[in-house]
Each structure stands twice: as structure tokens, then as C-alpha cells.
Image 1 (cartoon, rainbow, N blue to C red):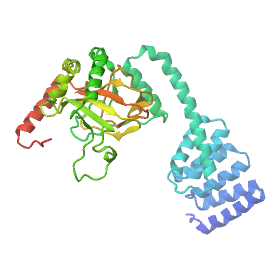
Image 2: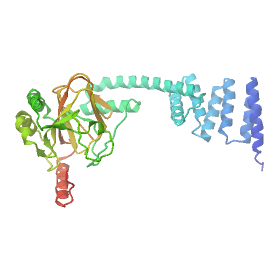
Image 3: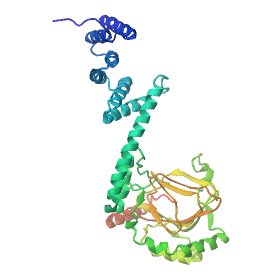
Length: 394
């Protein structure tokens, strides 16, 4: 039985290989590196050196074989992935180049700092991946547009999100509930209008609702209050800048299932429109409905809501240019008189970059993915919890 040569032989053969490579004797370098690998077959660095010799000799196939051998020893070999990316790209093997450059970029992202010699190589890789995904995104978007007319609103929305997320164009957000989480409901950002056949009816009341709001704002009395009111002693949070300020103001018509009768009396058209909606009725919890006012140059920070059992509806009433609203990975502009519904347990934010007030009617209804039976179950859950004597007072 032949004994394994000592590592010293590998060290010496590698030294001779490097010297030959520097002298331009590439065939001798390949032979020396081959001898080094025979002496130490578990060294990825030796395989990379051999790959360098094959590259100098212009032998693409053997270079790639040596790089694959290095990666078979250690899949985290950053230089091996970089060299593979370069070689496949030069050979026009774009799919293999994309895979190699993607692996190199992922490994390079773990370096802090990035060694200066690697910086331009990784920058090239990022440019290659960006160009590749741009090309793929354009092609996939074109294929999507060809069939868009055959898709439902749900299919089109999900399909667009799939293409964008698959090619790194957007993040897919998950529900984050501060309170009640109902499992297995779809994590929709914006709900399809088809879930709410009554939307056109309330949209038709936009002018009357806006007129009532404007009259209310002319003489709000105690109806207008800061939306954010933190308890005394609360630590600094994302809400501290809005705490007890009318930068984000609210006039409640309903709050946690309780009517604000003075405001309802002053806004009969709004009250009637809300009464006609098949909303959730949960004692002490739902519905809530309020006029939301955002002063000029005010932002509501990214945040998530309390429960995914509801959908939040916005009916825009006063929307100057420069206002926007993001839920998850989708940003929309409010359009006066055009309502939409969204899941507020998915991260969302709002802004008014204009010089004028922005106003929206906001109210909650059932999450449309909950069945009638599930709604009844939730209602009984709260009733029984409250009856237990351990209900947390609001």
C-alpha cells in the first residue's frame, strides 16, 4: 500500500508552479500544480492555482474543471465562483455565468470590508446580474402583457408580484399583527375591488361626504384630535414625532364599535353611507370610522396594524399633488372619490409632501377572505373572552 506523500511535497510543487506561472512557463506551471494536487487533493487553493494555469494556456474546459473541483472541496470559495463567472461569461454561457456571479455576490456581501482587489470584480458581477435580470424582467413582462386581458384582477396582481419578486424587483411582505392574528388568511396587500361590490355606492357619495367634512373642519370643536396619543411615560418610538400633534388629526364617527353621536349628527350623509356598508360589528372593537387629516409635509412612518381579520378602506376626499400611500411592495396615489381596501397588518406608510391638507375617510370591514362561519366564530370568541371577566379595558 502506497503511503500518502507528506504535505511538504505539495508546498514545494505549488511554489514551483507559482514561479513557472510568473515566468510565463504555463505548461510547467500546470504540471507543478498537478503534482501539488496529487500530494494534497483536499486543497481548493491548489485547484484554483491549476485553473489559473489552464486559463493562461487558453484551455477553458480544464480551467472550469479545476474550478469545479475547488468548489467540490468548498462551496464557499469566493474566488472560484468569481473565476467561473468570468469564464462562463466569456464563453457566452449566460445562464451558467448568472448562477456563478449570483453566488459570488452573495458570498461577497458577507465581507466587511471587501478587500480592494475584489471590489472591481464583484462590481462587475453585480453589473452582469443587473443586466441579466433587466433582460429577463423585460421578457417576462412582455409575456405577461400578452395574456393580461385573459387574467382576473387577482391573477394579474399576483402574477405581476411574482415576476417582480422572482427577479429581485420587489419584496414580498408578510402579516405582522400587534393584536389578533387569524391563521392562514392570504397576505394580500391591496384587496381586489371585486370583494366589495358596494364600493361604487359609497364613492358616489364622495362630494356629500367631503362637504360634511369641510363643514366639520370649519368648526371642529372637540371632534378633531391627534390620531397618535401615547400614554404618559411611554418610551421613544416611531410615533413620538406625531404624539399629541394635529399633524395627523382624526375626527371619529365610530371608534371601537362605539358611535360618536355628535359627529354622526353633523355628518348625516356620511353616517348613512357607512350604515349601508356590510361592515364588522364586534362590541368594543369594531367598526371604527374616521376622517383622517394629514397636514402639509407630514409623513406617517412605516408600521403595521392590529389584526388581519379586517380590511381597511380609504375613500380619498381631499388629495393635493404630492401625496402617496404604500402597502408592502406597492405604492399608490390617492384619487379623490376612488376607494380602495388593504390589509393594514402588512407594513404601510403615508405621506403628504404638498403645501395643502390631505383628507381621507377611513373605515374597517371584514377581511373578505374570512367566511361567514369564521366571522361568527371570531365574534363568539370575543364575546366569551369578555364574559370571562379578563377583558382588557380600552
